[in-house]
Structure formats: structure tokens, C-alpha cells
Length: 529
Image 1 (cartoon, rainbow, N blue to C red):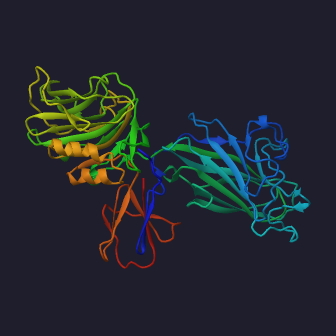
Image 2 (cartoon, rainbow, N blue to C red):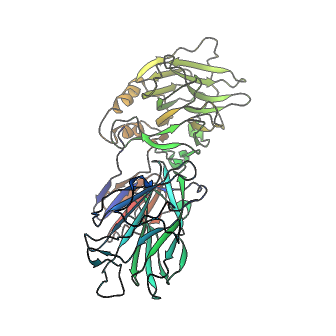
Image 3 (cartoon, rainbow, N blue to C red):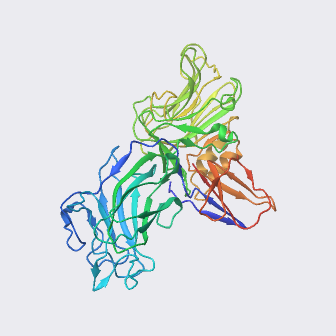
């Protein structure tokens, strides 16, 4: 219920980083090109009017870490926030000219220039030794995505060496694209050498698989050259959705992973009280699909249990939060429906004759904007429905056959039918499937364990009770086990390894991963999408 920033867990010579960086895998959206505002020229912070359409984060007495912000409305209904800040090796000094338009150059943002403030030249690594700065100004352009389930790709940008304000001596510009903050993990980098008056298109080489979850920062530093103006223009970037996988923690492992359709919103507040639990939000036919697995479709006379938590926001009495049915021809499998709040939750099991329902149980309450714990058991001959730890119904609806026909090809779906029909509106969390009929005592204990504040308590209980499918709806996880000299990492998602926390290599391995000897120096691991 309380999202938690992923933590790091050191162990001996190994350090595990769990979920420190998530990468987007979905295709990039149509490119968005950001050009800076073309309002009347503003030459200094001091004279920038407040109705200019931008926000100045500091007054005229800017410190070395002052900031400048713009808000722009661009494609796909995204309003990207672009924060521009800087740092210098000489505290108290800052570029007097910092503006985003010029009569000769409409639509550009000047980064720095060689002007005087308080009688001092503040040129950036000037060729004049008397004015040279040992490190120089660094400018940070931070692109913040619109929400927790979005990520950013920076495709390219344009650098301009303003003609006429320097000499013909080339200047060297260093750039980096980093994750999260100016000191975060470097995703792309380069060094450009520019002559006086040159305009240069710089491609970052990023692709949608490198999209950064959270802020993406373009760092630009002028490393050498004359006292000259440099300008930035045309940031070309995309916002893309989060990765398309919900990870299975049950014994089916990756075979039980679910593919999320476009529009599914991940990492919402979860049903479990302990920190670090998340859920997934559905609506408008979004869904998570797990391909047919025999373990999720045991024989008609074999026992099983289906369990999930749901927090609905609305209902038309025909919403399907969890679904495992063949709908065409002679129906097989089962489906859950959320009915009106006072009617509750409805389990339907099909008997293989047309659209006939063999078992039809309804009970409990389906309260809007509140979590409900919903469980159904089948012992091979009869079904039971539990809501919030209590038996809600064991009496079959009138006229039903009392038979069940297991499916041999159904797709397990969360959030709607497998084809998007009967969409559920709200969040779903901790979906589990067991090859046994859990007892009433065990089901009540699951409901009670959800209120524990100890992280991992609920998860351990679900796995200990034999879940083959367990979609926690959490980000990728990794856990380190170090039994003597043979440590291993259990993980969901993609496991990556590093020796310096800067360069990461994805490992083509499955969980658990036995870390090969010899264990020399430091080894770092993280899981990501």
C-alpha cells in the first residue's frame, strides 16, 4: 500500500541492486521535437518577465546551481517538463546571458556566453589563461516523463557555435545522456569538436530499449575553446510506455509471465500493507495475458484454487477481473465477474455444453475504491467462494448442472476477457493459482497476512502454499542467497551484472542464477525490465 524506492542489499564481496533501473521495451512513439520558445528576446535572468510563460526558479542573485524551467505541450497529450540548470567551478558566478531566443536565431536556447558579472569574466575554459576556468560550466537538461509508467528516449539534439563571438579556434563540447540525475548511470555519451559558426546535429544512438524510467538528463559541458556562445536547439525525444511484462513468482517461473496490453498502468499502490507492494490498473479493455499452460488448467476432476485482490472503481455488473475461459463453441474453463457492490463477486465454471454454466457462485461485497480479497476453490466435485477471508457462497445457483469442463487451450487473462471484452475498471494485485483446494483456515490466514507490515510475509505464505502462478504485479526483483562458497541470485525480469556500477551486461540466464567462481573483487547485480 506504500510504494518503496528499491533498496540495495550488500553481501560479502557481492552487492545486489534490485530494480535500480527499469528499461522500456515497447516501441517508441512518434518523435517529439522540442524547439525553444520564440517569444521576444530575454537577455538575462534579471529582466525576464514573469508572464513570459516560463518559470525562473531563482532571482537575480543566482547561486552556482540556479535553475530555469520550461513547460511545453507536445505530442501524445504529454506535457514534458524540461528543467535547465547548471554548475560551475567558481561559486557565485553564472552566465549573464541565458536566454531562449535571438532575432538572428529564433527558437534556440543559448547555453553560455563570455560576459562579465561583477567585473569578472565568466567565460568557459577560455583560451585566455587569465580567464580560463579549470572545469567550466555544465548544463543539465532534464526531461521528466508524465507518470510512473512512462519512460523517455532522447534521439538527437542540435548544437550551434554562434558565429562572430569568438575566433576560429575550435571548441570541444562533451555531452552525456544519463539516468535519473547528472551523476546517474550513463546511457549514451560523446565529444564534439565545433568550429566558429558551425551547426551540428548530434544523434545519441538511443533506441526504445534504452528508454529511461524517470528523469532523463542531457549533460553538456564545454571542455576547451575560445570565449564563445554556444546554443542548443531541437531536442528530439519520445515518451514510451513501460515494459510489457508482469512477472510470475510461482513455480511455473517465466512460463507464467504475463504480457500487458497497451495502456496497462503498472506500479500502482498495492493491496498488501507492507512497504514495496504494487498493483496494476486496468480499464478500457487493457489486460494481462498468460499463454495456455497445462498447470493452470488441471483436469476437470482435479482440485485447484484461484486467488486475487481487487480494488474496483466502477462497474456495469459484467466486469471480468480474472478470466480463463474458452468462449466460442462449447465453453470450458472459468471466469470471475464483479457485479454491483452489494451483489458482490461471481464465479462461473462452464460444463462444456454450449454456453452452459456448471457452477455459479455469487457473494460478498465488491466495494468501490477498497481492496477485496477474492478466492475460489474447486475440490474436484464442488466449488466454494470466499471474500475477505470468509465463506461467501458454496450453494450453486438454481438450474446449474454442477459439472465442470476444464479447458485445454484457454488463455489466462487479468483485467478483461482475453479479447478485451467485459473490461474491469480498477486495480488488481497478487493473483495466484494453486493446484490444490486451499482450506478455509489457509484462506483466512492469507487475508490476515496481507495486513502484516513485514515486507515479504505475504509473498512467502503464498509460495509456501504451493502457488504455480503468482503475479505480484511488482517491478522486477532480485534476491541474493549466499550459502557458503556458492552464492546465487533469484530474480524476475532480466538479470544484469557489473563490476563498476557503470557498465552493465545483461545475462542470458534463468532464475536462480548460480554465480560462477572465482568470486574475485566486487560483483554487482540488478534486475530490470
